[in-house]
Length: 122
Image (cartoon, rainbow, N blue to C red; front, side, top):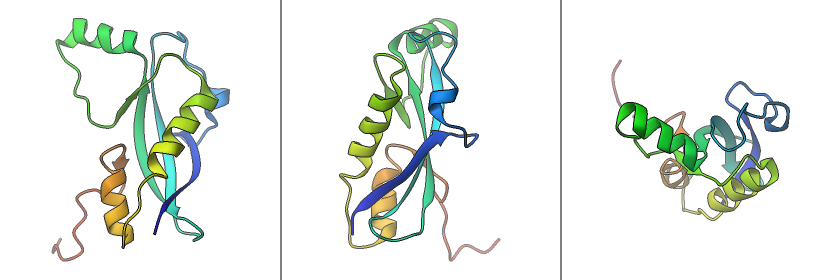
């Protein structure tokens, strides 16, 4: 099985092209990649903070640190490049089950089912 990106948009399900940040060189925009198994209809969400180096610098100055998991650092707000980079990265993952593929993609973006355990009693 191989991963397939079905769509990429803001976490509010809006097109990235319609929501550029105020500063194109200093931003962090949370995007949602909807991903499933290539050729199948199902999909699940993976959230990624796409940010510029200047934003990281400003956050470090303000807070002293930035925790790096689930961030993609890019040189500027270029929507075609951002979508291409996310797609290329995610679609490189394959596995024998969706859980295996999802676990790999979860290193890149926060998976909606990350930490889900079907045997856990609520």
